[in-house]
Length: 518
Image (cartoon, rainbow, N blue to C red; front, side, top):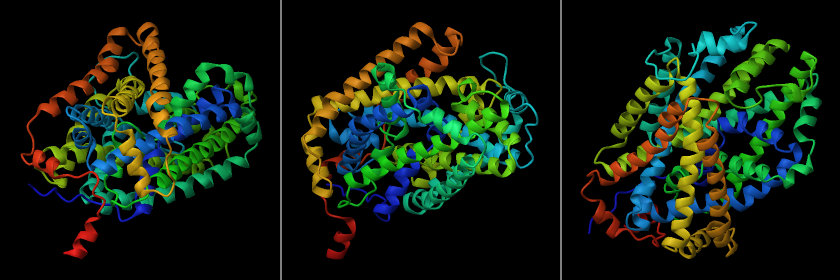
């Protein structure tokens, strides 16, 4: 039997932990959580948020870790080794990462540009007109355009070259070192930003608006769905990232303790982001003579690229604040971008007989071209907004439902996976984990999928034309399904079957221990 190809490894638990946190801490922490919390009960939202973290977020994180570490591969390899026909589910997760990767780079290019714009407040007196008009040159309505925005090309090229550089260097020398540098830097910069925000006039008004509890909202099912949704999208689970990352851990690594630290670190950063954002919005409200509840644009791209530039122009030392804020966006986004890219690169490497450099160059070239043609045009913002909505709230949720139901009820591997977690981890997982993965999580996700799917089918999204939503929204989901099927049936490396036959998921001997024996 053929000897399985030796996999790359993290240098240790710390390297993996920083990479896992770096993946989870992304743009959504900064521009999504504060608005979601504010709109769903303020301080009271933290109750369903914590419940969602404990009953869905961390349990699925454990599932991803167990699958990747036990079956040692990218998502397609893991699911192929888990059950016959499983490779297609793995490629579906890779497809989701591929789609997200294509538009994520454009948002990073925006953030990089605005870091520079902050120095002289280039947006002038009308940040809305500057962002949508001067910078994005946004068309009046959604459509298909090949009119590429020239000002986006250079920052976008820099982003893709940076991603390529990290990918080519590998897991330990590229991904791990990038996170060891960028994640601490992000925490320092963002902490400075939050401290500065807390001393602004009106900061307490903003914090009161965010954290004043509306306990009446706890009886609203939409609030609970929002909490599960936020936790789910924030932790980078169920679309291949943590499966791939955990596969690079040495065989006797502690999985559950690392998962707990990563989960709570991510949530802590979200709360920190909420404090910084709403302290700043409180300043804006006081400066404008309105209440915080009267402000618009408190979430998403508009918060970052319209509302915050307005605030920066109002406050003393605004340019410094702007560089800190947009620099933090770049750092948070880049560590997440690298993790998404690793999912695709690893899968391509394991499918085809090519090296890491070739796989990285191929993936970056294809994704970079798509990002320019679809998301860097005069209709790019509409396309990005639509694809992001559908691929996250339909694609990822569907992936998670399939994964949990198949593992729990189809192949009944939860006992083996729990045993694997407990063999290598200090924090022992009980039978409660079975019930969460097999019942609670699928039920919550099915409710989320049904609610979102019904709304999108009946009400559409943002008033966009139906044909456009069908093409760019449902079309993105359809593309992911087709991508999964095509890559499953596509011929690849000839030795994969032999490697799978030789692979023993219960072998917890480290490669370095084998070298010592030899």
